Image (tube, rainbow over all chains, first blue to last red; front, side, top):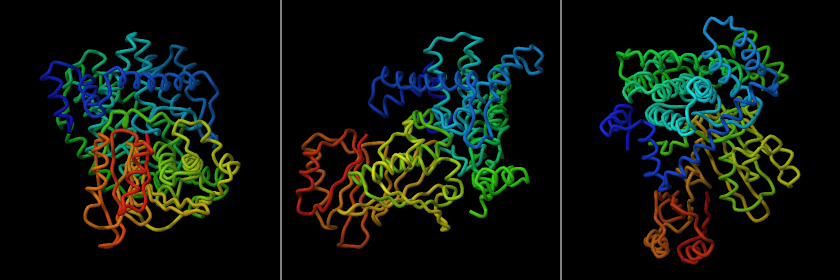
Length: 295
Length: 220
């Protein structure tokens, strides 16, 4: 049983296996289920993710509030023009992250990774990589176990709740989880996975949870978009051999402490940040008929 | 460790938009329904903290109503749960409370019918994971992730031995157990998380113990 990232990496490296293998092994131990049962359960979650991505990039998805929807499709059309600065692959990942969150905002079916508000980053990056590397279904399922292993560490040592730790705990965690999983799928070592995780999370520290009208829409959808790009860059940096000067577990600890000292107004209460901007308040009043403060 | 399974992180599969405000709320409602054990005639729901501020936008209201209707987090009927509850003859009222609670996402649910009433408090701790923290005035910690037995009994010696002997006889392993009481020598509550669903017969056997007042279960 691993309690932190250092133990997770140590377990994988000492046994010469992958992070995903350690996660599967621990799940077998904890649940008493067979490996086949656990893998098929994860495969079902993967299918939900694939369906949500496909729906988001092909259908006209609109949320009930009207705040979000349709951006994944816009980006798919744009990236095919070949004029993009950040590249087709990057924008495909971003678009697929947006797709998932747009479906989520429209009360569609998604798989929380680790939460619904941050559900775009892991599948967004995965289904872009699917086009590039053509991984097997087994490798794609492993991607989710690797993400889950690092998510497990961050959830138990810090938080994955925006109400408790701000957006850094949600999209921040998702981004770092995806970065680690990308490294494993690309053939990196367990230690490089942890480096990618640390690099990604360091750059999400301090991110507040300030949703307009309290809805998981603005800015959540676009934060997932940027999370996907952040994850890919962090993975590339780790694969290049760059290391984080602050170890993974200490970055997680820092994230936890930042979350604890973050004002309540910036932790999913719709009282501060973007939610409290004139336009944010105007949208809120339009959606609810009255501002939240007068409710 | 609060999170024990990888599926706490990669999951649940759910109807959007919020794992804590939608999926977590549905789970709290569903555990309440299981503990009540039958369809209630009415439900009063009180929202605190972030739940109180944002429940309409997150569909927390429909989610909790869906849970009370015994819908799982991925059940698409959640979207219409308030109408469906009305059709099922469950009168649901919801209100926003100002009181400061320990956890920002807290809901209190009262379920009742002519036979009785039950009150519980649940918190949504992130990623769809929940804990039931109070039941009819008893403090407890129940995840709702495992089958569990909740036993109200007299606060006297031999209660734990009586119950656990029956479980041992039926080869039922206890994963986690907690006992709490409001006052010494009065009523107490035993919460036992187990590895498999408990059959009706075993419940009756436990209920027949003189020291036991009531037995309810949470199933998978």
